[in-house]
Length: 129
Image (tube, rainbow, N blue to C red; front, side, top):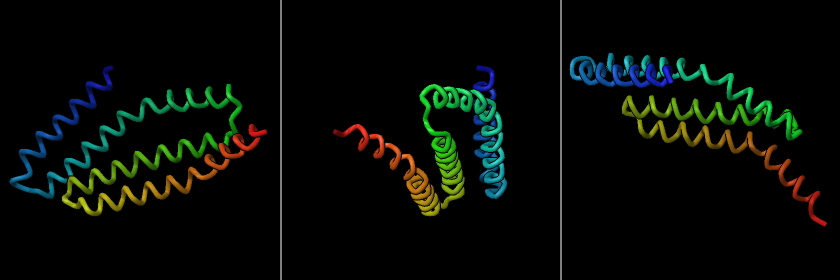
């Protein structure tokens, strides 16, 4: 819970700093926004080990192929990174570029998820009489 308070505090201070600095130096406001976002990400990363452990247990208990495990985390990582990058693009006034970043991320996720879809289809075919 303490980490949540830190994240909220960083976000509020970043927003206020951007609001104050933007009329004077818009370029500094963008830099402040990016630094604030990176700090929030750094504090959020502390929970990743818990997530990796939980998914590791799930995959171990269910006996799912470990290659799917790595694909799932890559897909999640790509989703977060593209969303973060798109947010930065939007903050800097490049909404069109943000849309293209999101589209690129979605296409990469689609391609990376194909082995998972293939595995699911193989399971379904095996279950059919």
